[in-house]
Image 1 (tube, helix red, strand yellow):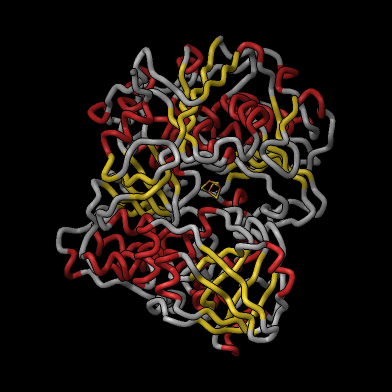
Image 2 (spheres, protein in one colour; image 1 turned 90 degrees about the horizontal axis):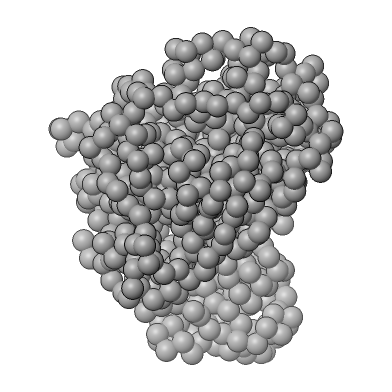
Length: 640
Ligand code: F3S
């Protein structure tokens, strides 16, 4: 039986397990990346493991999220990250060098290799033929320490692209079409593998736009072949030696197949507030626009911004629109400056921002209240822009540029002849903003300003857990409910004592103080507890506040893994109706916890109401061992 690309890479990196979809496998990780919002924790965790240097082929620490420096916190984080990178043998991509995924694609991604990143859009490098996966910081820290990454063996979906893209149809429209067809849940437990003649019309950055937004499908990863287009891109980056051809066998088998005819697509748009809320632009053309943001790890490459510059050249941004543009990397910005396209953008009225995430993650340029913002990013969740009642639409660069000129949502086909931008034969390669670790790493001291606080570490699992129900929540509690984002809170990502005081603040503003005063306790919740991101602070903050166990009807998978990683016991009701008989303030008792965990025969006694509830867990044997050890850090340390 022929192999697809995903199975070829997994087979070459399989450390444990069988390649049966749904079963846990362990993958050897070749490269890692971190960004600053998750990286500070990852390096504190790596430090706690206690080995002197990373054991990967390559690890890179990027600074791209919290680059606004209105106070000392972000600057403290950057200094810590730079010194930790030097100490542990990690390359450090400085502030202003660009967004992690764009820079990784340009300078480091290698076809056929595995990449684990502490950012959900790590699959962007799948555009180069890598198997690139996003994970929590602790998973990345353990991968840096040379341990394999545990993941469910994915199903592989073939997205077969045929035909030539219709005029003005871009990579963004292709992934929006996939999102329209499959929805934001359509990729869970799957790798999306793109093949077909349509692939040949897409440049590497185009492919990366598509693999980037595979994260919005919930996919484990997305991948394109490594072909002559890839070879040309790598050669233009002076990395011809990194090229390896990769493709599926002619008779490769897939778990599912989806066919898309590119010649029949039209320019598309995702309406507020979900990336799969996709319609044709023509259906909503004419709606007034207040802001246009062009950038983010989805659409900020050289060719993206060259097309924008060509559309704006000699014209003027509409007086009702604020146009902001953040190039994805310093290389992109230097290229635009060198060939005059930057002048065209600025002359037209674009406001150029730093090469960083910026508005994508609500750091600066929040839209006006109730404003409409057209963005080239990957997410349009309510409130993410920093303006609670703003309406965010997701489009291609071309559609964004068109709206910047007209002041209304505009079908780019109205602009006339499509723009054609050639990929340069050579990019202006200059890695001076990537600091290589020194040879004498023993002499390096890690610099910790006041924003760098020690990592909380769980005590080993006790024999008995007794505590008050400090909080009872309903169904679909997200990691945003547990640990909100936003620029002010994100600046505290490396300061767990401070950030923990914001835990659940949008649900119950007294929670953190009550938990500290009570010396910990228990959280009770409904269905799908912890859905949303892989944010490990949603487990770290409860750990710091003394929470011992979370008892719910069901968990979102990644959050449950994070609870285990940090030694918080995730339990579910055997009988969901028992949830109704527990009130906040009740005192619960779990006896023989360690033994009951192994045999999965645990009972919670409600001492306040004199009731008993059978409860259970869905942990693997490895996860039980991690819980018994007191979390993944201690578990890994025991093996060092
Ligand atoms: Fe940054 Fe937004 Fe991508 S926060 S990594 S540009 S999704």
